[in-house]
Length: 164
Image (cartoon, rainbow, N blue to C red):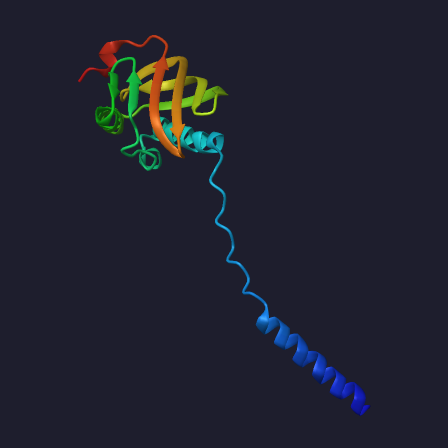
């Protein structure tokens, strides 16, 4: 091998190593962007559906926090501020004790910047054993990536189904 090429190769390698040592460190990977509000609303609604199908609301409860300031339900009434979270937790506890077993169809989403309203049909049993088939609406309000409002509406049901 020619001395020129071996010295040249060594000098090139040394220069490359030196320039890499002087280069600024690579930036850490950027945090993944926050989920778009519509995607977050879909995850929350899917967690709600899971609870309504099986009685297991654990995934839905993970979205609940002190930011929830508005709750409305045809049979449980309305609540605002801190009482909203307590009222929704009370509703869930009742459904965990006497679960609904519902399937969903024809789900449609209507939304604005902060309000995501799911319209759907559901069928199965409610409050432990009562047959149900009807049209339902769940509206979720999201602000700053958090659930701040939950409203449930449904067609006729016998209020006695929900009295303990």
